[in-house]
Length: 220
Image 1 (cartoon, rainbow, N blue to C red):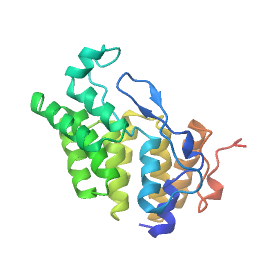
Image 2 (tube, rainbow, N blue to C red; image 1 turned 135 degrees about the vertical axis):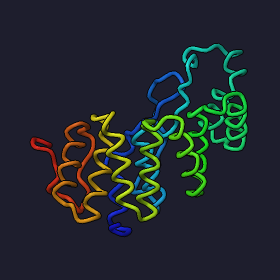
Image 3 (cartoon, helix red, strand yellow; image 1 turned 90 degrees about the horizontal axis):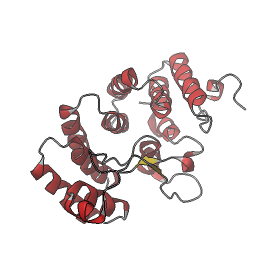
């Protein structure tokens, strides 16, 4: 891995415009403080949120009434999660798993809580459980790749991003982070190509400081 300097490039400029998916599939924007990211984990979590940071899109969640939502532990967990009540959210996700032990969304959201709580080993275990249920589950692949890169395993992160992109070829954040990971192992040209493709897909992104030549053609 390229060390802390390269790690910081996982925080693309314009990251305050990122969004995550709510239970009804709508995009919602998290609140970020102004100024640069603080610390490696904060930088990584901005990259996480650039993809799908919170997901609980269980069938039937969209448009549910208040009584239905109250009876659905996954929806209750997401509401608590968004409000920052992580203990309450965790309890609700475990309740969802008691009802359905193969609920990949509950495992993923538990991984998110562990991830933002700086418990990477636990987060990784939950992401892997979600992927055992659905090997192509894009948000779990994305977040697990970030964890593996942070742990110093850029080659594994690269494989995870490539797996994700095989079924989600227009996932700009994955192309961006794949480019950073490729550059970190010396594959500069391939990395620049991936970053340039990410910028073509999402013009709010900008090349990292270490890759000024990775701008997409015609990018302002």
